[in-house]
Length: 522
Ligand SMILES: *Cc1c(COP(=O)(O)O)cnc(C)c1O
Image 1 (tube, rainbow, N blue to C red):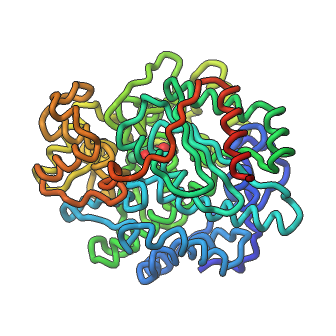
Image 2: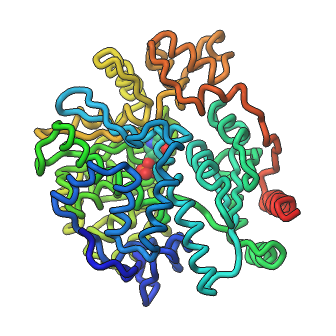
Image 3: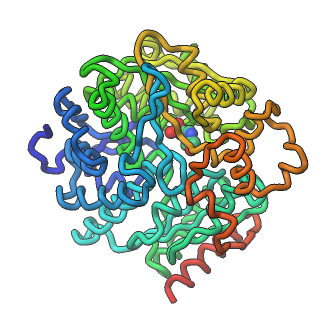
């Protein structure tokens, strides 16, 4: 299915700052391109329908390997297969890796939360660290790299734990995660501070997520500190954020694979179109579905689901991306609470026919005016491929209850935003709804939904005093849904390894990173 593989598919950047393309391994190590652009592959592979259907006969890891090979990445076939087997094996709680549950004959839920942290970030973050480490190794062997890496992540919840699980035990990499000390749920905090492994550390920061992120950004920008880490510890800082192409590629895999699966199960006729509905924040997951479509998967319309932070829905419906006068809203689906959607840049790059000048201009407008408007032709293309809707907090919680009552199936608030959007926008085609978290990751709002308590309202005192694990147990009793993943069910019993709270400033973070790396070197 792939053409002769030679690693010749190079990566170019969305702002045209690099004059020559770079190989996959280098794009993964660099993450962000010089000048702030994002990397995309020069060529997209194209799959015939029978190539897609043939994937259904392979285990998930081999499906992923076949798709990476088709992208013609500069790692050997043996290495790709080995890394995929490590990424998608017994670390997931089902052999299917990303199974599909049919709610009826035209609504299919793609469960992306069977990985170690019970959220969809695992699909990419079990894979990226393997490829990051192998890429560094290959560059090192060629004399193009002479240091190790320290990944620093500021997290508001899901990403931190998924990155810890992905990078723990990976050669040549350490990882430190900073979270707002009082700004994450009991479950999210316990997930992070109980992480095992020698190359990991977790720090609570006094302040909110913005403070955390600002602190980390300053550390990345401190040239003297970065030079010191390189000379003292032979370590360069890196981030694992969702703009890395190595996080996007694993997400393309499950959309192609799902179509194969639906046909193999007799749910969809071979070649018949489906729509895909994705709860969207940084636009990574839905962009992956768009790439799967370009590569030949019979996907018709992409349904973009927003919560009350509806900047993407407004863009798709008006052609204008405007955060100049937009408030950041806290919702029951916190992983979609964003204003600046970083992967959108790749989508616009593709829709403009890869016009680097247009992207430069819009990103400059966004920076200077907090807004930009896309041209009529790009707007038309966006309207051709996407539909979008935003779901308010009350509807989100009501949807959880409705889906449970109608289908005896419990969904989390992010999935509920997607489900409600699919109901509002769907046409003739069957819809594949991306389900991005297990309900037990967001038990407090699932409890509110089941008991008709409005979003943002306090839980009754006897419920509020429960730990996250105890609350999930209560919900399991009430609903008969006893499928709480072990990684969430056992949290209260696990040893807390990380209790450090640090001040919310650059110097404190830098001291903490120094101490972490020094302790690792001993
Ligand atoms: C990250 C996340 C999303 C949003 O995905 P994007 O790729 O940023 O659009 C949705 N749901 C959950 C549970 C997430 O963790």
